[in-house]
Each structure stands twice: as C-alpha cells, then as structure tokens.
Amino acid sequence: MDYKETRCGVCLPGFMAGGIKRGKYGVALIVADRVCDAAAVFTKNSVKAAPVLYTKAMVKKGIHVVVANSGNANCCTPTGMQHARDMVNEAAQSLKVDPRNIAVSSTGVIGKPMDIGTVRDLIQEVATNLSSGPKGSIQAAKAIMTTDTRIKMYSAEYKSIKIGGICKGAGMIAPNMATMLCYITTNARLSKPQLQFALNLAIEESFNMVSVDGDMSTNDTVLLMSNKTKKCKLEDFKSILKHVTVELAKMIARDGEGSSKFIEVEVCGAKAQADARRAVKAIMNSPLVKTAFYGENPNWGRIIAAAGSVVKVDERKVEVSFHCEKKSVKLLFGGKIGNLEEARKLLGNRNIKVILDLKSGSHKAVGWTCDMTPEYVNINAGYN
Image 1 (cartoon, helix red, strand yellow):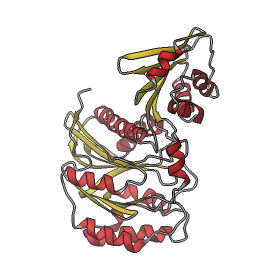
Image 2 (spheres, one colour):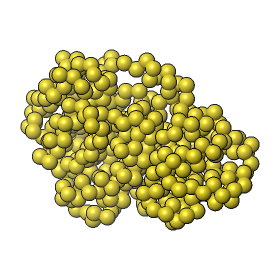
Image 3 (spheres, rainbow, N blue to C red):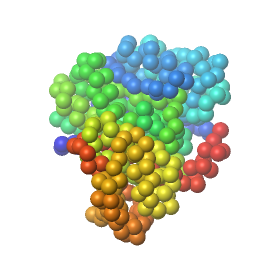
Image 4 (cartoon, rainbow, N blue to C red):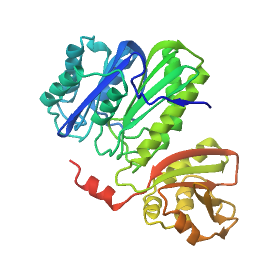
C-alpha cells in the first residue's frame, strides 16, 4: 500500500494538542474543533482505573477533548472517580466545552492518591498553549511518558484518509492491550459501528501483538476520534488504521524498559490463525527466551518449548531461523541443528527477526517484543 507518512501526529486539520511535564506529573490535551464520533478499547484487567471506567461510559456520546496525565494511575484509591471528574471539569472550564464530551486517562503508580491540585494547574497551563502543528502533538506525547525514553508518534495518509496517533508504553506491556495510552485522530467519515469495528481489527494485529514483560495494566486505553470530514471506503480506512497502529506498536516494543534489542517474532505454517497467534505470544512472553536474546545465546530450544506449551510442535519437522537485514541463519531444520556460532554473531545486532515455521499449515502471525535485561529489574525494583 502507498501510505504517505505525514509527521503531524494527532494534529490533523481540525485538531490541536499540547502538553507539559513538571516534576513527576505531566498533562496532555487533545482538542478537536467539534464533537467527534469515537471508538475505544480498554484494558481487559478486572482491576480498572477510575479514568477507564469514566471514559468507557462517555465514549458513545462523542469526544471533543482528551485530557490525560502521567505520574499517577488514579487507580485503587477512594478518591479515584472524583479526581477523574475533577480533571474533566477543569478541562471543560479551561476550554469552554461540554464536560460530557471529554475523555480522561491516567498513567503512573497504582494505589496512591493523585495530587489533583498540581494536575489542575497543569491543565490550565496546557489549555492556553495548544498548537495545531506537529509541535502540539510532540508536546502531548512527551507529557504522557512515564518510563518511556522516547516519544511515540506516527501519522500517515492514504487515498486522502488521514490518521495520526500518539501513545506511551515501555513496561507492564502484554497482549490483550498493552499497558499504554494511545490516542488516534482521523478525518474518516464512517459510522460509529464502523469505527469501532475497524479499531477492534487493527488492535488485534498491533497492540495485542506487542509484549515487553507479560504484565497487563489497569489503565490501558486506545481512543479513536473522527471529525468525519472525508468520505471514504471502510476497507481503505481499515488498511491505513492497521498500518498506523502497527507502527505505534513497534515503537512500544523498541522502547521496552531497559531493553537492548528489538525482536520481531513470526510463527508461520500453523494449522490455524489462532494457533499462530498463541505461539507468537508464548515466545514473546517467555523470560527464558527474552533473557537468552539479551545474552546473545542462540538457544532455539527455549523458542520451541515456549511455542510447544500452547500449540503442537514436532521438533523433527519445524524450522527455527534468525534474520537481521540481509543475513539469516537456520538454527533447527528437519531435526538438524544449524550453525549456532553464526547465529550467536547475528544476535549481536539491535534488530532481530525470529521465524518459527511449524510446517503444519498455511497460517501465520507476527508480534513484537524486546529482550529482558538487568536494567529492566533495576527500573521496576525502584518504581514508585
């Protein structure tokens, strides 16, 4: 597909954004010039943060503004729902919009009351410094970062359909929605059910196929807003939405906490799509696989063992190979062991692709992860 990268993030025509970070707290705003039709997907964790519960109930009314904070998850505290409402009301007053059309998100430490005074002050400040250009999107992306080391922003155009997104996420990342906040804007004129259908499909192939550590968050939110200014075909929209969400998902895996390697995992030759997806997730979530990649240890046994825990694997038939740029090494094929020394050298690269061919069908799936390093332990041992 001929997707054109536009580098404007969420600031498509008709959208403004801004953000600020002060100390451990940050606030981002995304503001449309009208109430937008919206679709959303939230964490599947049974423990849900107050902003998730609040926004879940508001999406069907349409979204005019998104207000999000970093530094505190606003989760599992007696003041959670009140503080979510406080954020919405502050944004409504500062921007002079209806609070019934404002979505709210939070990310950070669970179980600690939010410093709502600081968050309110930041909302007021951001509201007076919104931008309709890339700067606004960059500021918003920076404001929602926690342990992220880089901003995550991507936008593209296809057949005049424009889509842009920002997200955050580096740790507590697992399939079934990663621990992330993601906001996507578009000009596509489609019905609300079509927007939701397309978003659900895109997430299955993107954010639900990324993993850093296998832990599911309480605050996961993906929110899609459309100002409906461009008539388009659903199939075209589905195509570009998947493209944008996959690019954002890869950014999360590349920035996994403490990581030194970005790893793409492909399982092919499966009897069913569901089998391929399960095998990819099992490999991505295996600490033994992830630490082996950190140690540049070509331990193919860990890869087939992880896959074999969820699907049928015949070690006499399967193939395991590593790929990097134009180089590739087969580690296991037809029951024979390949050149492990060459495989070890290939693992010295930053970007690696692993292919497991089950040799039992025609279905495949792809996911993205990273290695697990001592720095991951250091980051999370002291996170508070």
